Image (cartoon, rainbow, N blue to C red):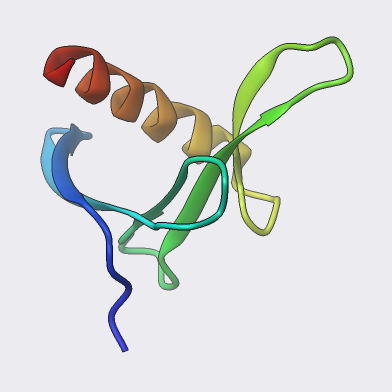
Length: 80
């Protein structure tokens, strides 16, 4: 079954990627198809110091989550 939610495009590594926003989690949650296999799921989290950062679910792909998260932020800044 395909997840419902808004879909938008970002450019990552000079290639368009469709990002799906997943509804209902109480915080932003995004599904991103990647060539390395399973889709990447990312969200924001708050560190012990209060700083908000992008992270992958499950953890382990933080560098990719940070890179794509910044592009998602830029997309929303453009549309608002």
